[in-house]
Length: 356
Image 1 (cartoon, helix red, strand yellow):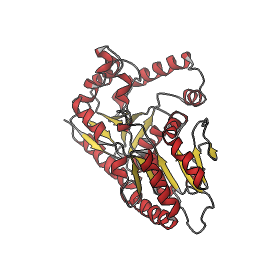
Image 2 (cartoon, helix red, strand yellow; image 1 turned 180 degrees about the horizontal axis):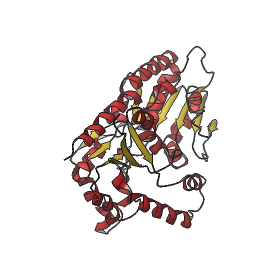
Image 3 (cartoon, one colour; image 1 turned 90 degrees about the horizontal axis):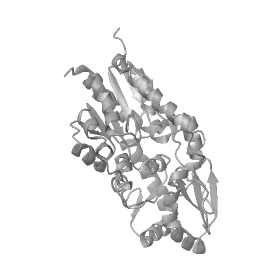
Image 4 (cartoon, helix red, strand yellow; image 1 turned 30 degrees about the vertical axis):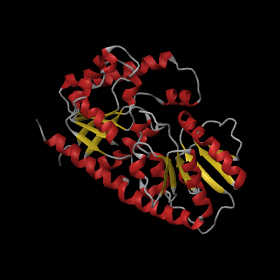
């Protein structure tokens, strides 16, 4: 029997961090089933994330420990066939630190689901503004979720780029049943405390709608909304209850600002709504424009377009179900974990087999 292929996985977060959970961790059982042995080493630990979500002051001693721990683990990479890196090796450090991974002669893959490179735009130093150039040029594979990210890594010298959307394990998503119609129209959003700010984009739209219709904004995982003059139902995020709450939505929303940071987003919440059989309304920005079509919902570029989209679904409840069923079908066909797992497995296997 062949020995398992060994991958050292440098995630950014533990399971508490959505990007690490979705872009890497959810694939690992499939890799294990196909003779890969994956050692997962998050950079930020759960203490850091819990403090972050609670708006607590960063613990400097913990941060120093995290950098030292990552450096020590970096010294072990020669034991592995591949290194799989989420975003960067050393967050907020200059390019010389990022380039350390190139010194060991081990092939490495980098994954991006955000335009994280814009974190360094404000630095005047060449060491920060060009942090990723050598790192990406020497990579064996860069995995991205959209063209905006692909264009950036290509400009940095990446030679092997693979487009992989952020996907869902369809088996874990129960589809909404439309046998009972809500008396109120439930407008749903899922996110984190740091992304709650996007809901303020459509605050005026929602307040106008509430004067004419019986609506409720359902927020999952966000921080407290201030000065919203509409009924709001809030839930803490939990992986165990996530889908059950999503299936109470009548429509799922994804408002975004139109900035370069948002152009790098992968539209994951839209895919969650769709997997749950929920129609969607989203800002017409970045990858949203590829995910959303007229069969599953609406794109909106102005307050007027947002309001018209909401009113369409409020007045046409039969279309809520039709669009929701179409959304589920699209999630199954294009954003399923099982299908994309096979794509990654084959790509990683080819990197190991190609000794060049």
